[in-house]
Image (cartoon, rainbow, N blue to C red; front, side, top):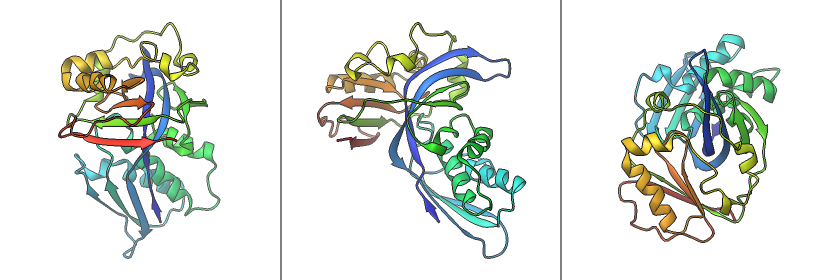
Length: 271
């Protein structure tokens, strides 16, 4: 079985308050994007669980990988057979695109195919929320307004068809925990849930990512990329999550060849 976990971008991100459990309540819109990892799951030949990876180097202990955590979580509650999981990592880490969260959620969805009776979407979301705040979104994988830690989702219409999406990821790893520590939470005057209904041409200055100020101060290159996207004609540009990915929305194909040396650059035509 092969699945293709995709990533997401944040359309706006407001840090509303710090919770007593140490997490933060946020408001954002998650929007799925077609940069994908690949996960292959096969029956184990020796009756043991195995995990391996290739592609981009994944730091840390493999036992903490969300694919492994997803397997352990399902195994704890259901009769999941031993499998081998191989992850081909393509989505850059530390970029604010939720690639790891997507890997965990897609592993849950794949393993759900191996048990009877299968879990409903709502049950899968409950399990995904135990893996990480962004994981819940990838169960349905549709544009959604998110609040709470990011696990409380509601359907939202996003007016992006007809636009080109360009994502630029510099070789900078932003520490999300550190970024949160530098934020002063505050409820915005206008909710992102309202701003998302405006034409994209009116988002600049209204659709705000609260992480940008603190991240741009520490990593000026990320802020420079955002400005370059506007200079190239973006109708809206923003950092995704806590960075380092920056995306721009364009009415026409942007001429950016050679503009971002050393960066991961991806573009999609939504027409």
